[in-house]
Length: 137
Image 1 (tube, rainbow, N blue to C red):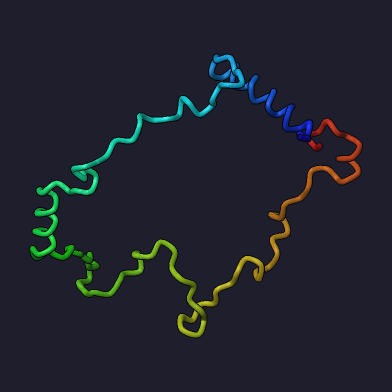
Image 2: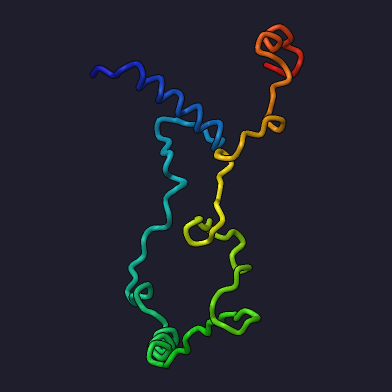
């Protein structure tokens, strides 16, 4: 019978592991699963596991037939008294286009470029290359 060397090594290794973790000498008769086995299975002759207790069964069916109240949903009306949402209801109001609002919405990129506010690097690239200690990696 040819056994690959790996298997022999693994067998030896697993015995060492068993000895370390379980503090049991791993002999050839040692069964690593012996601690995992439960008591011998017992016959459940009364079918205990399949029965629901009577109380839960009756109360469940009782609940299903009884009328349930729907959740009450309240909508806060604006101070004007109308049902329409007030402008303050939206933290971020949707952008209004100039066709229906008259004001033109400009995205930041479309505005005049902020010359002074634009971020400028403190060091030029060759300065960064020269002075590694300035926080540049």
